[in-house]
Length: 413
Image (cartoon, rainbow, N blue to C red; front, side, top):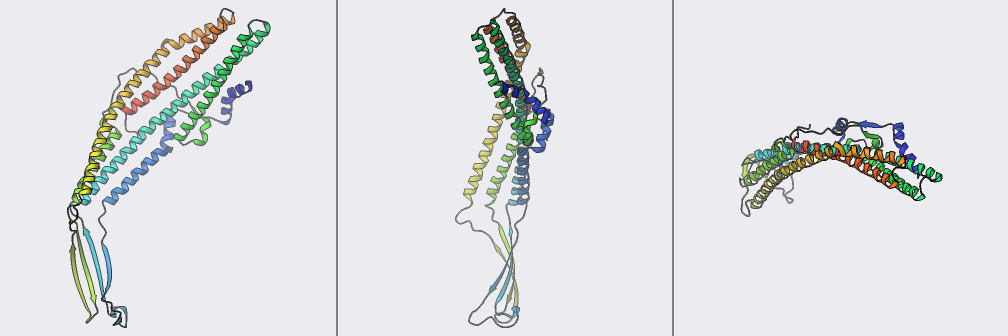
């Protein structure tokens, strides 16, 4: 057990020997912007929407056809070159002419979807930035908890060793030495758990910044954000990228509905042809044709109904996102105020009181004026409040980040 504790205490020195990567929050954000896979996927979706816009603006290509007519297997094909064969040759060119502003409506819908994809990219950036800050603050918290755990384990180790010596001298009872050994084992277990949580936090942050191979060397060297006492200010919700994307999707759905209705306007196919006739005397002739669809069995009622339904769904989704955004801002405000008050309560006196009580207990026990149980209780209380204070600072940092991304968001590009 003692060898395991020594190895645990020497782990930071081993990390320094192999090199550490100390990151500030700003440096972590820069690496995230450069290496985030989620951001690259969002930009790929944006590129796809730009390609869809190009496709939407394209006019239908013409069709060309070459036909051989009046071929008789009984009379033969005739001798001589191809142009002297006894068959008719027909060359035809057809072009579809769209009516009802279909191309303009396709472009309008594709433009709206491209803008929605761009705002989706911004929304992905907003959400992933929140995830990055969470990962960074989790690593910072894990570092503090690991330090507290290793310091506590070392303290209990020294106490257990001193207890054995005092037992030999007859100063304390064997049952007190057993209590010290139990608390030492518990502290060693907490230290190992804190180390595991620290390593997990390193892995999460390493993935977000594209440094998976360097996860074991990552350390956060940022201090906790200071408490802000000024009034909380909100930016207009209309500027949030997720709501902007929802509005663009609604515009795209409206364009798709109009496009479905425009299908009732009959498209016209114009054709011109050249015919070379060799059945009797060689003759050349020209012609043209017009074709339109006949709406006998349907007039695209199903397609129009489907587009109307998707428009209603887009409208409801936008209303849903607006309502959720209002609730998210309210929750972020409440969480920030609560976390701020918790940090002020802990740092305003509770943590200092626990430290004074623990120091007084250590001194009193060393002079024989306090029992072992009271000393252990003072140590546990101090450790609990220290861990709670670190967690409170992390909760405040996360709540502040949530508030900034929910209600004080800016252009993150």
